[in-house]
Amino acid sequence: MNNLRIANLSKTYSNGVKALDDVSIEIEPGMFGLLGPNGAGKSTLMRTLATLQEADSGSAFLGDIDILNQPVELRKVLGYLPQEFGVYPRITAWQLLDHMAILKGITNNSERKELLKYLLDKVNLYDKRNKSVKGFSGGMKQRVGIAQALIGNPKLLIVDEPTAGLDPGERNRFYNLLVDVSEDVIVILSTHIVDDIRELCSNMAIMNGGQIVYKGTPQAALEDLKGKVYQKMVTRETLKEHANSFSIISNKMVAGQPLIHIYSESSPGNGFEPVDPNLEDVFFSKTNADHLLV
Ligand code: ADP
Ligand code: MG
Image (cartoon, rainbow, N blue to C red; front, side):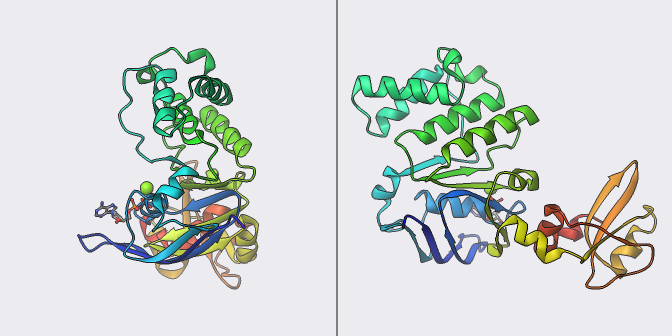
């Protein structure tokens, strides 16, 4: 099986921050969503899997490949789109991809030409192939990024917060592209945006404070919370009081008034009404990020 198996992975930075705290998880082919607030450790995990930094302890295997000890082997089957894809040079999309393909070892000219045509067509940039990447929109740059990540038919595709800064249309096109390539491939998509996971990922994990605090399907996560989420419109003045008395999992402004969701095993009364849980409720209830909301 070509599953990704991560066991007891830990990493503490030299400043004392424990970014990975005994992370263990098995991931199967398909779209996998890694959800977590900023600072959860998502990028650290992804850079470690992409063999760009070392862990202090633990192991990670992709099928037979020992990721931490066989980085060269892993890189042959890896596609990686980092959170910061960096400065885009003043060269054309074609030149950039051509260069990356050579770096990935595709030295045969006609083979490379065919591949670039295929990839540029796939990310819908063939018409723009002779334009400077520097002038591209955020969405177009991300599509160049995913095209370079797809060079060499990766078995493991890691994309770190790929939709940050994209408009809704660009986001949708990007999602469709990922779903398109995810057959037989492990795609790990990290995000702090719950919407990214909802329709896209068959499996997910939630990370917080360097730990995996939930793993399963989005549906099972929702099922867990069923009957335990209640909502109420409150005033700004009473928000603090409510925060003291109830376990608030989210707080949204609706027409200028806070609408709060709380977690409760039984009916809390007090004007609260039951509501179907959403993934945001799952996220906040697992990460206890509610203190940020009030
Ligand atoms: P995420 O991608 O979920 O936002 P990161 O992996 O980037 O999380 O960061 C996890 C924690 O590790 C944060 O507290 C962050 O400040 C810290 N961190 C990340 N990279 C470094 C580094 N190179 N040196 C020191 N601390 C770091
Ligand atoms: Mg990150």
